[in-house]
Amino acid sequence: MAQPIPAPAPAPAPTAAQFANPLPIIGTQYCEPYPVDLSVVRKDKFMSPGNFVVTATNESKNTVIFTAKRNLMTLDLDQRVLLDAAGKPIVTLRQKRMIMTSQQRWNVYRGESKEPRDLIFTVKRSVSMFQRKAKVHVFLANNTKEEVCDFMVQGSRAEKSCVVYTGDHTNIVAQMHKEITLRCSVLTGKDKYSVTVHPNVDHAFIVALIVILDDMNRPS
Image (cartoon, rainbow, N blue to C red; front, side, top):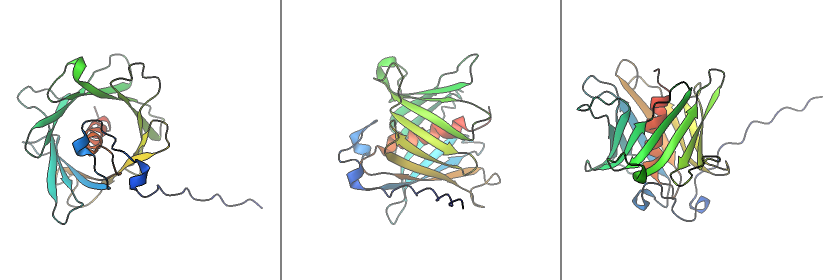
């Protein structure tokens, strides 16, 4: 008699022991020794297309810690800027258009720079209509050969969720799922993501990834 196939084990709960030291990608100030819960809301209203508001939900009172905006003055739809709570630019996210390929590529630069010397990391995805679970690879700036990724994002469109792993797929660094509610729908022009960033992981890095992933998953 065939044995039943066991259900997959759930992802382990975040613990400080998972990363004994901070894992800064954008900056150590964005690494906390405890799990960070975030709410990421994408607004599609006429005056703020593609803008994001990020709040920390660990505390009793929600606090806006980041925003991400397109520069409407330049009409550059391939670029967004991630700002801190004071409105200071942290990083610039810029899509690099790939000709005659299904690959999507975004480069993330420090501040408002677009110079190669200020590159922090690159996000790449090869698009396949037959791929049920998309895999996105992240390469840090010093990983110039891009043979092995530094981080991997694996997600399910059907489940509207994703998990961010280290490149060797041994450690989870963050988890995200898209909320479907009456308040966050096509009618209200909002999408909402709930995110848990594991201890000592750079949550500004994770937010930048989510903004890019949201764009990658939208129709061209």
